[in-house]
Image (cartoon, one colour):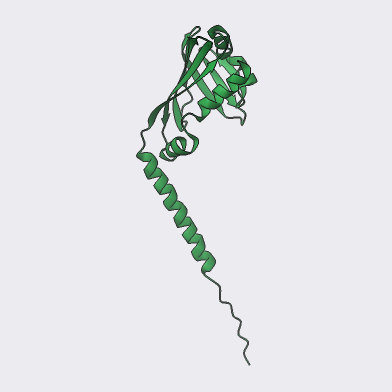
Amino acid sequence: MPIHLNLHLSHKPIKWFFRIMISLGLIILAMFLAGSALPEKHEASVSRDFSSPPDTLWAVLSDFKDWPTWRSDLKEIRLGHNSFTEVSASGEEIDYRIEEFSTPERLVTRIATPDLHFGGAWTYEISSTSTGCRLTITEEGEVYNPVFRLISRYVIGHTATMEKCLSDLGKKVK
């Protein structure tokens, strides 16, 4: 009597694997196409009022070396000539060029690191108010990768980093 081994392998796991891979591919393609429909450049602004006078806020804002003491996302700042490098808490390094430094009301910094998925400038403007001053940060940003562009606009939000900066600054300056 011959012995028959049933070596029938199920194809269900393989089918599911391919279905998942095709679905992921279609999701990434959809994200790429949706991101491609968005403009590469954007502008966004946030503001916050402070009870301190403009000179006090300017002193903190213009002391780049001290930024890691109040910005929770920074580990270190390395100063250059009309430039600085931010080292994030995660170790990422981004170079910035100082384009305008108008005491005590306007500071413009621009990303100078090449080959990032994003670029642009932040303009910090301080104006007097009846109770102190207002800081407005305006981002003129560029997101080059369409998938990152979609995520930046709809998941993270163009103002998230600026809002975090204002929140951190509010803990240092009242």
